[in-house]
Image (cartoon, rainbow, N blue to C red):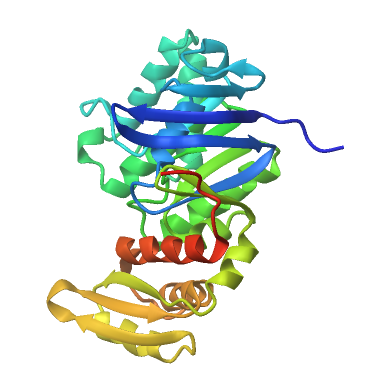
Length: 318
């Protein structure tokens, strides 16, 4: 028997005036990790807001744990949501911020404090939880948002681009955490516009483009389709020439352009998974310093156009 559905969307659309956020999406999510993949503007955040009960669908139905999700306290008590945008009490410390929101749920102060500390420690914020949020880096703010999402030990996690703002080591640690949560039987819906990030966590993906569900299923099928489609990667490092020399030695690297003034390089690769492994070796084994890795959005968009053209009419009317 298959695992019970925790999240069910039936013909769900959400529009803003004449602008379509998501259109006629039907999907069932079961325990484990589901990756939501799409270029910027694909509708990922809209879909996650609908699942999390922050937005009501314009049409169709959303059931989470067998109930309507919109503005439902019973669902909110069992669902953790990390939004893409920031919304902090800047003068609070990290632990005060999470504790205060747990208190608003009706928790006792001792339990709220302990749970906030546990979540922040889990996310690598033990040494910084007593600092004011206004002093946090982007990566620390991202870790705090994810800690807030897991502090009440939810059954379902909805994580919108949780790897944004993290350095290479932080991204690796976050991937490992998500994989652990999936192995524990939680339902994790996690979005990214980077295929490899999703592939490192799960084989099960949903692909959105222009508000439509382009494809769902096994990420290995997507990887096979992209075998001959190079990816353009932007990398920021204090040692761009050393990084370029190291990465040019890798057979999957097609080209590298160094921008010394910006401490950056632009790279084309035919195999992002192999590139990512090589980059980890550069950081962990060769002692390289990398502060940012991202795939150019316009190239991601071209990938989805490429896939849409190869898979035919699965998008419905525009």
